[in-house]
Length: 351
Ligand SMILES: Cc1ncc(C[n+]2csc(CCOP(=O)(O)OP(=O)(O)O)c2C)c(N)n1
Ligand code: SF4
Ligand SMILES: [Mg+2]
Image (cartoon, rainbow, N blue to C red; front, side, top):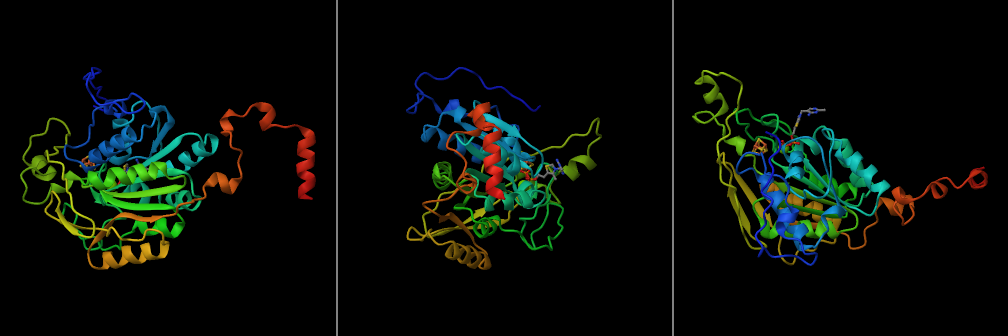
């Protein structure tokens, strides 16, 4: 089933924001992802951030590629504009929409496969062009939708659910975004709402390319050898009447830890994530320091989380293109096609 409607009845006492909307007005349909998938926690953080920022849902355009992560825009902001594009091609569709109508708030949702494998070229160009958007990668280190192949963000030496070792070096999208000129760069964990919601709010308010890498465990990782709930075990011991996959139900992994500390988070497959929350005194104004910090923590087996880099006066694509303040899709024919004399004048300027 790909579409589940939610009950329309709202409790009359639900808190409302300044626009008179309740949190429910920012929800989408019921999620069809595996229970406990980190991606659902990110959807919930997006809902919370938009509710708290009093954003009118019709002002948001949510765009995605293909993957479990890219399915999630269906599960939040049901009254916003949405476009589910092709695998790895969300950035170019978002860029086009942004150029045509600069008045909307652009939210790109992608996966590590979508952005770091097939879409790596698109990712690079949308960052270097400084498109005004919030770009979230829901990073689980695998192609979840196609059953857990390593993605390009999987760490070298990590094990697949089938026990295969990943011998390739990983791509760190945070380091890439920093190098490519993104003007707001952060990393978080899906289960740390206290950190994630403010980071999303900051990204939505930022008027440039904002990138968020959110670690988001895939519960289907738990299908290790020896488990009687694994796909393989179920397939081997099942007289199948049709081809189905069984996903065991897991609890959402949540965590809370103070700035400057390390938190070890045990994932469903038993592997440990070592999250390092940056210190309150961390200076997020230097691109170079952010790159050094992320890399040095990585070398110690830690994942730096928090707002890593922020440019207070970002330039965006419209500044570079010198476009008019009116969204292009609102210009009339006369404004878009000012006539032969104007064309002659323009051509003369090029001679
Ligand atoms: C052009 C193209 N190639 C391959 C696929 C198959 N495919 C669908 S989703 C996916 C990977 C998704 O991984 P990721 O972006 O990390 O999302 P996740 O499911 O892990 O959230 C692949 C390879 C496709 N749909 N289109
Ligand atoms: S396969 Fe993994 S990424 Fe996809 S919904 Fe299930 S837990 Fe989430
Ligand atoms: Mg993935």
